[in-house]
Each structure stands twice: as C-alpha cells, then as structure tokens.
Length: 476
Image 1: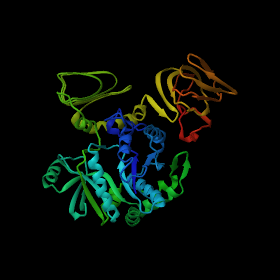
Image 2: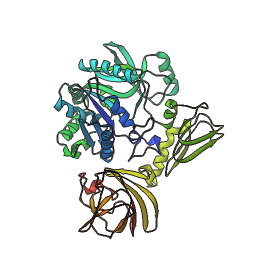
Image 3: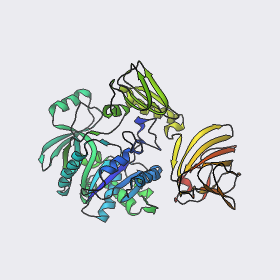
Image 4: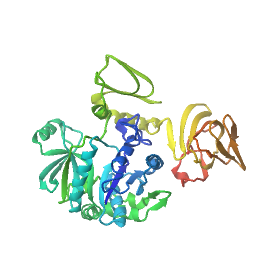
C-alpha cells in the first residue's frame, strides 16, 4: 500500500501578503477554488494503491487543515503535530515510524502540500514507476524535467538506467545562471522536486545509518506521542532533540540506494508571485489577474485584488497584491525579496507578518472591524454546532449583538438564547461562552471595551476542542 505523507509545515513568506505564517500558502486557494493542500490531497485520494493521507503540520494550523479535509470528505490516516519545525528529515522519520508500526511493508509517498501539478495522469504513472523502485529497496527522488535554466532549485544528475528510473550520480546545490544553462544543455540533470518515495523500513534503516540522532528522536516522539482529538501530538522533548535537517542532506545525498524517476508532470513549487504568473492564464496583454482588476496599457503583470478594485495604467512586469490590510507592489524580477519585507515587519513586531484581518479558529473565524482607545469591534462567524471556550477576561467587557442565526450564550450562571438583533453584555471577570445551536452559521458583532484589549487576556475553563491555555489566544 502507498501511504501519501503530506508535509504542511511551511509559512510561504515569499507570497506575502496573501500567505502569512498563521495562514500560509498551502491553506489558500491560489490557483483553483480548492486550496493547495486540498489539491495535493485530491491527487492521492481514491484509486490506484493510495491509503488515506498522513498529514504532518504544526500546531497552529491543525484545525484549519482538519476543516479543509472535512470539506473534501476525506479522513486522514493520521495527523501528526510537530511541537517545533525541524525541516523535513525529522517529519519524515516520524511519519515512517507511524506507518511502519501499522504496515511494515508500507511505501511512503512524500509530498509537500504546496506544489502545483498540472498533468495528473502522468503524475500517477510516475508514482507507479517510483513504487516499483521503492519495493525493490530504492530511495526514490522525483526529478522534474527542466524547461529553462533555473537558479532557484537544486538539481539531480542521473546515472545509469535502473528499472523504471535511473541511479543518482549526484545531488547538486542551486547553481548560478551560467551553470544552470550548462545543466540544461547537458540534458542529464533534473530539478529536485522535494517529492520522494521509499519503504518505511528502508528509510528508517538508512536514517539509522546516516542520521541516527534524528531517527531516534523522531521515533521516540512518535511512540510517546499523545492523542488530542483526531491529532497525534509528537512528544516535545524527544522531537526537539532532533537536529534540524532536510531529507536531502540527511540521507539522500549519502545513501548508495538513491534512484531518480523523471517527472514531466507540469510541476511548480509556487515559490513566488512570479511563479504564479508563469503558470497562470494570461490575457491578450500577458496579464494574469484575479479579483476586481482593470488594466490600461499594462502588460505582463500579475495582479491579485482580494479587497476592492485595483487598476493598472501604463505599467509592465509588476506584481500587485491587495488584501484587506496590506498592498504589495514589486517588480516581477524582485519578488524573491518579498521575504525581506516580512523580516522588516517581524523586526517591528507588526502583526501583518503573521495574521490576516480574518483569523480562523476551530469554531469559525473572526475579523477586526475597527479599533481605538479602550475599544475594539470584531465580527465573529461561528460554525453550526460549534462553540467557543468557557472563558473569562480580566481587563475587558464585551457586548454581543446577533446579526444572523441563533446563539446560545452563557453569562455567569445564566444561559440564554439570542436571535437576530438581540444582544447581551458580559462584564469584566465574568465566565461566558458563545455557542451556535443552529444549522446555519452564526454571525455576531463583538464590541470590546476596557483598559487592555490584547489577545492574551483570557482564562479558559472548558473547551470542546481540547485546547489548553498556553496554546490559545484570547480570541479563540
């Protein structure tokens, strides 16, 4: 059986301001109506030899991912939560440990959650070739057939023919432009896609040989992991003992059993806004646009209007991204430097580096409407059957007004039902809870007032999602 292992730990800072650390690119619909994670899951769901996918992510994204899988009607074989990011080798070691305990002959198909693949039938054929090699004990990398000299990817130089693929002669670091042109002309090099395939037993054997500290820590973290609803929390101390390293450096560059399967699958790692322009549908002037966009004498631009109208006049080769709270304008040749803007935001402790105006929670989401001295207004949307935690604030009071739907509200010892246009008041230091008992989403306006309105002013007493105080923010 082939076990898709989907790695969803990235933050996608080069796609800011749409991608942010608490809602990164893999959780966004950048190319279709589905998110990139959902597109990845859909490729390996049903048919062929695929088992249900195994997800590896960080703690902050767990409920968003669970909701996206639920929206697809897909159940994960497991969802492993990393206490800290340690690159791909520890994540793969944990997944292999979990799968080996379930199926010693299981084959891992490791896929980043944020890649685009256009040729689906070719992808399945390539996976079948990789599976044959993996069953023969090989550690398989998928090499993308290059279409241009590319300095942003590592390369794989292939050796002799080996079954449905080739031996790996060498893994090569990201080259300069002249070297990349030479690789393209040579014809014996492919881009390293970051997708891999190997038996659970074989990858663990090789990791014990080449990176024993990683596999020991990850295995212990998995076996001592704790169940939390539908998630498996990897044991923090053991996982944190793992050195941070990629599977490429830790194993693939050292093993004598590496193989590469060529994959002409219409692949992109969607690593920057220019990549989205490359693969996007262009108008007659070469523009790729999304949202409410007008252009006049403008060509070869990528424009994404997530909020309001964006108009371009007499400008070429730029990227313009407009969200609710930020606008990015960059030359298409400089989009790799967007991450430097994110670094500036973090240095200034600005929330735009990590949060959107709309912040998702397991019960729904909230959006900031306005704020000022001693007051803040938010819009809350609560899923049917969902519930916020039973909580209390020391420094702020709240007013709740139901805009649409029905709310069950606990204030102190009182429990009441509020319908549309009805409201209630929650004093400072009063236990309270908001629930949606209906079958439709609950829309509610929250007005906060007090001397301090920070997200860390919360005491949680009970929560149906199993969150504990040190994992939560006040807005949860």
